Image 1 (spheres, rainbow, N blue to C red):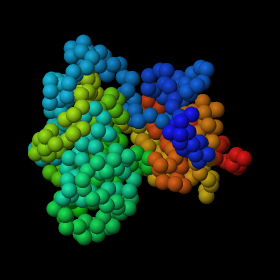
Image 2: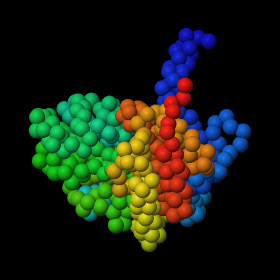
Image 3: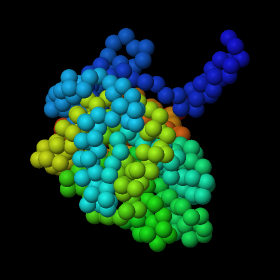
Length: 410
């Protein structure tokens, strides 16, 4: 083996020793609470009750979306054939952008939107385009990796501020004399489930003449009376807001969008390299997303959001009942579909996940560097498709497991 390969093998072995190695599962069936999953290398799949997807409204396998995807492929073909600026921008893409702009118009004056293949690309695009040499990016400590990488790509100086600490951010902004400032935050934190103090962040943006970039990946479709996300939930409006919304989570398909004042969107079309230099997503995907937006804002969306809220309340009440006070596991404060059970130790988190597997329950263990050292957790993700009996089964299993004394493997 060459020294190059040997070096990589050594790094992988180090990850194994720290219980940090990641392994993939193969989903044999559509995204749903009950799935057939095969661990890489296993002989056969297993049917499990899964609490790990971001399919918060249970739309990923909805027959209406599957039919719309097929209809879009029949109408537009399989691929776009080029970038949005070179023949790849279809009528379906244009209709989706117009529809999303209309959704955000009550919250962003003169709103327009821009469709991206993924939320990761959207965040890279916004921060690398707007974060020039004269800019300073104020980045939340627990921001998603895509926001962190977008800030790294930008030519701007980056200052981190403590989690949800508005006073600390105010002081940092007040000491900054840069002509361009960007406050950057998740709207719903993907590993903690709590909601950022968005109204206070917007007030700081107004006070300090800054942009407010919000990644609403885990709020879009779920928060707000019609599922339009954190801005609808909080009733906010400003031309300073640049909102990134992901369409592969609650919307059930794939892709993402940026919504902002039309001047911002025009600037991104001219300057955002992740938008300019990539092939546009298949038009069929945009066609399916139009059907998804119909479901989200209609009666079915209202019903599914109510079901999700009921499952969240059930899980929290159940775990607060069965978790021993001062025990090795604690439920984080969260009102969203993301319900983290903090256990701290990497090996203990992996052990709990494996023990749940033995009960036929799939809950992923999240470890550093995704979360800070010493805060390994089970990330319980709920869906409107989970039934009352599903959540009761998970609560019962966790109640039995966390009551057991834990002995670290030799």
